[in-house]
Amino acid sequence: MRILKITHDYFPTIGGSELVFQRIAEGLVARGEDVWVFTSTARRTSDFIDPRATGYPPGLENINGVKVRRFRYLRFPSRVRRTVNRWTMAWWSHGWPGYGHAKSVFVGPYLPGLVREAVRLRPDVIVATASPFRPIYLAARAARRARVPVAIMPCIHPGDTWLLDNPALFSLLKRVDAVLTLTDYERLCLQSLGVPPSRLHYLAGGVSAEAAEAPAETDLRKRFGFTDNEPLVLFLGRKEEHKGVMNVAQAMISLWRAGSTARLVLAGASTPYSEHVLEPFLRDLPTEWRSRIVSRTDITEAEKWGWYRECSFLVHPSRVESFGLIYLEAWLLGKPVIGCRSGPVSSLIRHGRDGVLVGYGNREELETAIARMLEDPEAARAMGEEGRRKTLQTFTWRHVVDRAHAIYRTLIEEYDSANTRQRHSRHLQ
Image (cartoon, rainbow, N blue to C red; front, side, top):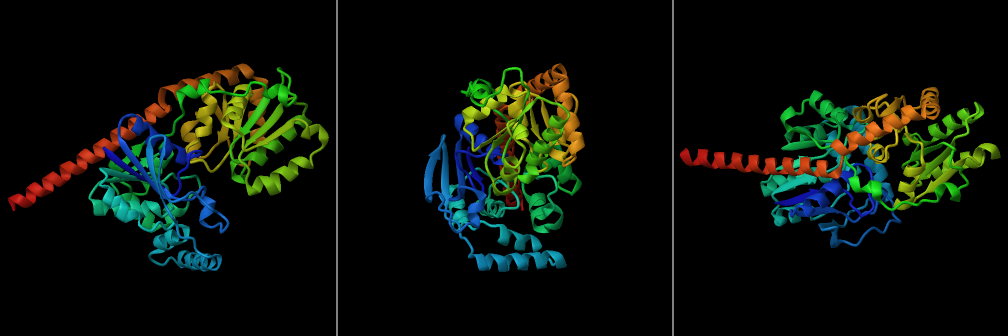
């Protein structure tokens, strides 16, 4: 089975829902399948509009057995982008037909030659992610010309309005052979908007069961001056506003005012928000509170797993998760989690059983949830163990690859069967 996966970016160190795409590709290679990825030369999504970005060289490379073909992308000059943006917004505000295609023009990226090379590759199935990036449209076009089935993994985030105000994209999801969903929330949302239930397939995200034994830094408490009996609250993830990192810091300050002795670790990739808002806020805190916070940027895998081992629980009240791989990682080590009461995360975390859900931006509710974890460590430990059981039972990469493999094979068989029936019908006529 030759599988062609198409996406806007693909690189060795990747996170979020794109990691699902990558791990499925590598898992299928391990099972003997021929897997190709067509993508851009971008190192990150922001490269599409950053004139200083250099990107990867175009051409073919092998990443963990996956054949990755990178195509140069066209970058609009800043003035042209601003013009296209104004044009797109005007199109949307007037409700003119074709807005979805106008939006894809603005979002991009343009990958000249991708459709032609996809057809030439002669795949058995084409799979693409994510909306609203243009490659999902290219994937559908390539599949139509190559006469093979196509599946789209849209990766819906809470608050996404593109599905409701983007008729072109909605029409695409109703036409393709399969739509791969990460959560029950996403599946039910698409079903309610008219995507046939028979075309919706549940994938979910995953984590490597072996990661529980991954190399991890073991001296983090000593290195940063924590004692062994001090509770450690962990936020881990990109330090963006909508991930809730500031809400966590402010909730902890309120708890310190009330006498809590817990420490706080904020670890993850830096962003413009963390550089210009979060870090200045932390630097201006009174010494007493600032000394209880460790802020770590762009950490290694070993440090990440070290913090998971040392923490009392994970707090990640993000409102923009399409799944929430971060919770699986914490659960794998038996750590309870606090997440945002959004559609996707509510589909994953069972409130009171393996974690706690809070409203985004509701600082009082977040403080109460953190205090509950700190004051009742036995109940917290029980939630963490329940999360570990659920993760090992359903959410390892082996389970995810099993589901993807079965879906792809079924699509190919059904497509071939339908074509055989059509040829037979034409012959009888």
